[in-house]
Length: 253
Image (cartoon, rainbow, N blue to C red; front, side):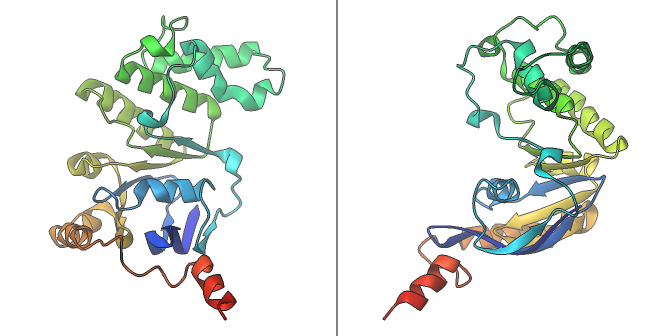
């Protein structure tokens, strides 16, 4: 469903994701894992068009950005804005409400059901600043349900959650898969990945392995990812595929 071809993303011309090629399988649960600084969140930002590509391409195979939902890390979200749980969830229905923000009876019912599924009924009037980390994450999952996206990107969705909340939200991911949706999640818990995700991308700025989880999360692949992470040098020569670098060479006297 989403094809990645020779993708490179750089910061100050140093690669954060380097010559990545592969395909996210449609209708599957795919995990992206790897050491800290491996380029996992950078890859999501590139897919969503938040940062430019230095090289390569992304093939959406007919999808539009409106059919893709992204849940960033909770730490990136501002919870100080005075907004209720109900209003936060209803933001997921913005395609239906339009510019005037009119909430239809159908949308209100869908919001009610989504809060019920994530066990947050009764919290509609509470401010999001008064929620625990786990409660807030449940509200964000309810909002995702209203977006009705075909592809869902989740950046460390279970960080700071207790075991019960994690298991319940994992069941929601399986529900989305049964509905034919494609779910791609950045995760660090390898046992969780092995138990719930059929596909895995092991990333260490370069692609270490990409395919079925059992063939990717081998001891040798994980050792290689750690070794590459230990060898990272942000003072290394810039990536030769960076168009900024190419232009500087071309413009040089």
